[in-house]
Length: 318
Image (tube, rainbow, N blue to C red):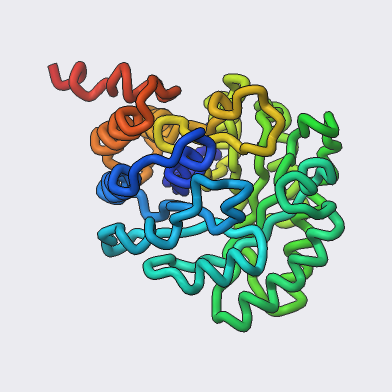
């Protein structure tokens, strides 16, 4: 337990991950209210929406209007997702988007074709072009992420060497261009991770790149989200993508009901950290209220646990 981080950073992705998977487009005012509530919790980075094909993801058709309508809070970054040059151009043109350079890679050709209309190798070629685009736009490249790092519903088991190799490639290509890429993420896109696999991948990457920060984008598809976070915490991992109330799910992951394949739940993981004495900078009570707001907007019970049970603060106070 000596390797526990002192502070954990949660990158909130609920607004984008959650609303993109729902079968309806919720009122803009409701979505804005959720983002603004999340910004009041101490979260410093919120992924608001994506700039992707409205044919493939119609729920994100009004992303520019979404960003423009939010009353921004100082100290909070309001980020976007894009998958191609057209999406990046739209994000640059939209009012209120904090542009953050990201590199995405794949271990699975089958998923890459569904999600990005390319193979994993072709995505590498695109990354080289992305680095040029970011340089031209003056956008700092902060992180690289490899999807289906633990397994793929279409291709099955993924050898652990594969995602590590993808991130090593990204780090090397960036270094050749003078980019100090410090944050490297493994994404459990389809819920295949387990604690042993988490420890293995984190350890393998650190053996090769001991000075980088390893992050995780985990889904709780099969109920192992909390166990996987605990395993990562015990290895000192301090960077996690998460979603308020457990919202989310990839529409191209091949799940029967993708709405049941959301990200790890932000407030539940914040509670875990606080119970273990790890700082997050987040007001858990306010975050619980934001989660309950998300549930009212969506209109059905959501997967978060603390939002329903409450924290232990009131009992300890009594």
